[in-house]
Length: 276
Image (cartoon, rainbow, N blue to C red):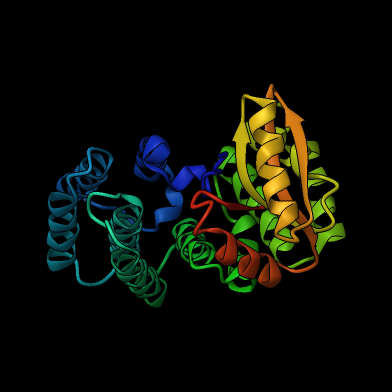
């Protein structure tokens, strides 16, 4: 099955770009001495290497040395990123309960950052972190609000493209299909050639939800799965893309209804996902 990442600028792959940006751009507010800056950068590097305890220790060391003033919000942002990444790491979060515990911890850290004197750019990243947590937990209204709040003050164009893309994704999950199409078209217009724009293009035109139960290279297997679903009184159909035949149930009018269908089908199709 196909899976889509959350905003990529907050994933391990692209955290390095944020390290460089946060190290040199003026919107952090005030000046950090070289040792303090090095402590935070070391934490980001350890986060990239999944050295979570070491990264967290560096953030805590910074906060002990600088309980007020410049850099505090960023240190909490780092702590939130650690918890968010741990939630997505199957080694540190083998169960759903573990995942939610780390997501709750991430939310707490991001909110602490916003409660401190956060420079504009760091505040935008903190709101984006909260949006990530909300999206993971399927609170799409809150995710939409947080990403919309962060968008204008995000410094990286790549990050802005992904934030706008996920604004559209949240609108789709809320059943705001026409509004989502407008947002996806805006991603294409403002960030042509980007990966976010390419994904946005594929999202345009959806007006209902489907539960995709599987993708098959063998069309006969796909038809067998679709036939079994129809016998169970599900409205099953097939779509073909890039040589894969995807079997899906729908159309389904709301995301809540799609979740209910997904729950019913998961015993037989544990990899079932909701689209869009």
